Image (cartoon, rainbow, N blue to C red; front, side):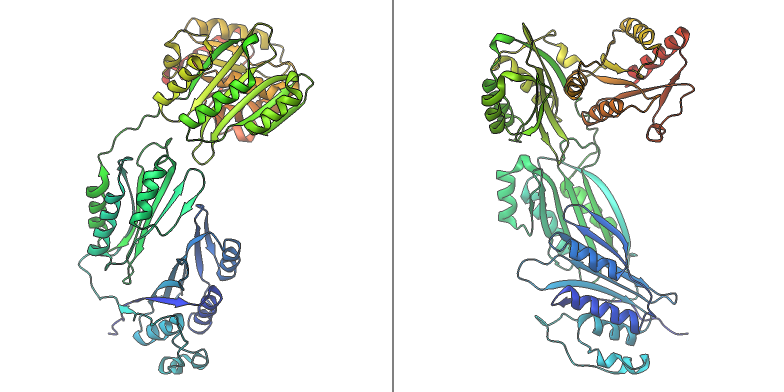
Length: 550
């Protein structure tokens, strides 16, 4: 009986990706019967491209020339011959490197394919038959440095090679020395001292690559509140891979660490990670967004003081994320995306026409948000709405307290009601089907009956089209939930649903029993009704059940 030769692992370098693709196509043409490769590409901005052939992979690499993190290409014939390569983005001023795995069952063929992939066998020596190819050694292509020899995988291991993905919890207050201790132990114990590549992604979109001890300590000391993800990955010459991702996302729930392993020591690696940086599983209950309403006497309104206050909030509490303003005027004009400097310049030119003002602070990478909205053109009192979702209840309350103590805003509720609203859905807004003749009766019954359960509901309304965005934002921000009738696909309904979803507000969907619902609402849980008083009362009961179950 023939004995199959073990697979071969090794490392290869090449002067550029064009040279690598030439080698892969040569392998494909001469030894794999033109069996196509299937490739996977990953970029540093978390994009993933699957199922690419070599031509598509070349196009993708040209498109992502400056941000590709790694790619893997594999090919397996119907007779069981298999080749897989893995290439990572090279460090600066170093040649591009990759790893390969060859498994054909023939030691001679394995070595021949190794010669092509590493560039130590000339193309002319491959042009003959496969039998001649196996016996020829061509000219050696000059390389940046001497290639380490490929190694035969032992025919047996104590443990089978397993690819697995595991999740775990780690302490967000972890220190760099703990991470470095972990990767050093993993490298020494399981990966033949192969180095780990450490990189960091921050909430403001920066990437930091090839971090050493000094770089990691510097970023932890100076940008700790900006860390979003840390990636640690390494691969050994015998084909073992360990990739660790640590998430510092402030709004994430559940396990915040993940590891991908391909190794015959998978269980031991998982145990070492959990023992070194893991903590017991725990329930991470994020606080609900805080919404609060304040009032300010119209005669004391000062836009420059408000701008100063918003900038102080951003600086002291919200990681210095720059505020952005939206204004609408009494003439129906609107201006969006204004910086605070631009808002001051606009106010100097047309400040006397200011009607509605909304200033938002949004952390795009994490979804954290804070917005302050007010109607400036009021006779006596200006109502100011605050909505903040930053993942920290103490910070939420500190921002609300700042507006009262430093800005002179007066809360329109009892002192403890802001906190109560975080735990109970008691304030809601409803938008009904346009021009339905039973709207007034439906609204009256829902408002009256829900008040018996201490749930306060009012209908969204706006005077002019250009004010729809402002009033919807303000009223939804100040509520605990949105109730919406989707019996007809009206533009303002989509708009309000989008605002509520962006703010993380629960949404209750209503629909006529006979209505044909738009496809995008079909996965939602709908409360169906018919336009009768009895049905409206039944609808109210279902709404109460939903709110009390949350």
